[in-house]
Image 1 (cartoon, helix red, strand yellow):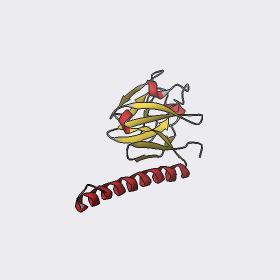
Image 2 (cartoon, one colour):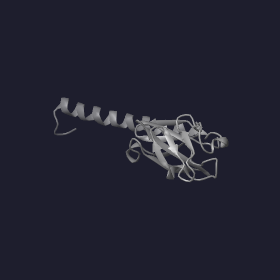
Image 3 (cartoon, helix red, strand yellow):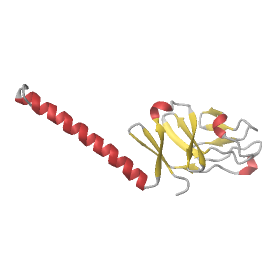
Image 4 (tube, helix red, strand yellow):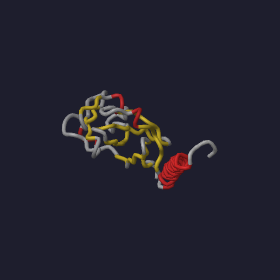
Length: 141
């Protein structure tokens, strides 16, 4: 590198190599996750603690929630009348359907005792976070 002392040029080359290695690891990590049936659904920057959002994976409506810094994914469809849970309220680990008030633990998918509890639990999906990217196991796989 013309114009740079040898030590500084070596440092610049080392930084560029490290950046390239980081890019390659992130890129191949994403490829590996895709090969394992995961789908990139968003970024941590768009999902603050205590927030939830709906994403579509194929034909499935999936609820993504940030519960104390840990990302969870479940079906976004209330089994009572097939209403979107992402329009409801999130209180700690529990989402409440805004249509009739059915409540579900987002960590386990279990429906909590109470009104309309005879309809069963929600499917929950495996989540992986790579860097700031959120990946969810495709429900159809």
